[in-house]
Image 1 (spheres, rainbow, N blue to C red):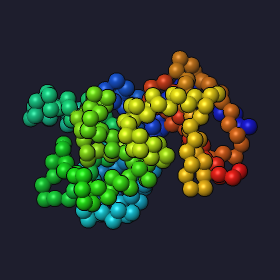
Image 2 (tube, rainbow, N blue to C red):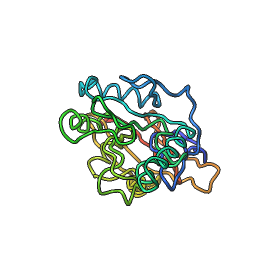
Image 3 (cartoon, helix red, strand yellow):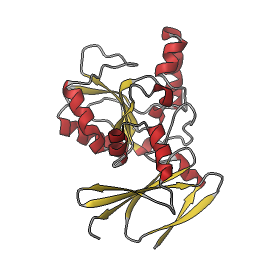
Image 4 (cartoon, rainbow, N blue to C red):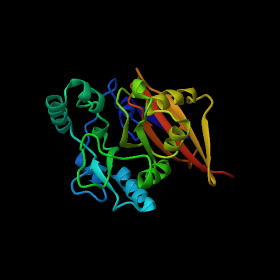
Length: 254
């Protein structure tokens, strides 16, 4: 068995961190971990998310039809966008569509706003319909780790209006589960607490692999030690709430 020590700071980093009105972004991002998004001039994302978005663009063959509108934003940029919208659009509109600084997913470097390529593109509410090439993008997005983050009918959970143009990288298989279950990231974070370390774990079969997912609570602790099987390929992500999520891969017939 392999022993792993989890630190309290691990809660606030990783692909599955929840950033919303209740849970702010804690760790400030560094430009070194970012790269340019394909088919853009100055839009960046976390490097792994950017690479997988490029693969998704290629799979959909949409580089001439879909354009990135907004990726990573610093807290200062988010503050300016918020203030400008307040002045131009009023409080009700701004509260619905734009998060406060430190509460925006764009600050994670894991979010991307996309638009169907047109002469005029609205920066705040870009046009990204549910048919044509945009439909093809949505259909394949979960296979590359992306979810539509703010679906219609979930506004009371996310605290944000329906935003069909806003996609969030959470990684696979989490993107697949969230999409198939028609739930939000908020709901998924709570759902995973049904599968704690030391209890029943969540298992997903994918091709020739079995993927194991479980939650570890580390709130109110400086550290926590856990054990997993040797030679497992695994990822750890905080949820930005109260713990971390382990994702392990192994061959189906091991």
